[in-house]
Image (cartoon, rainbow, N blue to C red; front, side, top):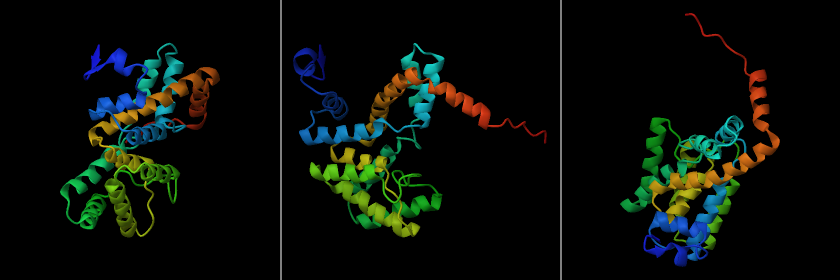
Length: 239
């Protein structure tokens, strides 16, 4: 049994960590120790986010189909996208385009910010409803990248873009964790197109934890009751 040229029994099982194997499958080569540490940090960051749509949906589903863990997890994962956990891909695409184009990076940042402001759309990787002025996860992720010395050009461009965003907004706008993850995954050689998939892998682990807890606490029934008691029915208008 082989996986991309490696013998599953002799080369993989008991020899590679889950993170190493994940990188190997997504990146096409074996990661260095530093690259493994960075990918692991990113996966851990996205794994657990408390009461979010993905965890709420998973808990409601496991209460409805208690023997079908895969159904509950899959249902929760369907909420990942441009709002929750999926913006690392969009941020990475912006950073990669800037580095690939070369030239004046400040001019590139100015163009990106002006374009998104004209569309009245947030730039992927920026802004957070809770973490202000800075996302502590972002600070730790960037420091981890510096610690393991994985490149630096994408991190530097992210910080330059952040300064440009702040100048245009007239205030400091948070770099959220997915923005930092987008930069770090580029630094270790992973393509933007795999990043949302990596978010799904990470959050799947967190949702297993919610299923375990839900089977002990039955919080979904309480959530259901709260919705019935606090969300009034509004009859549709006849106009």
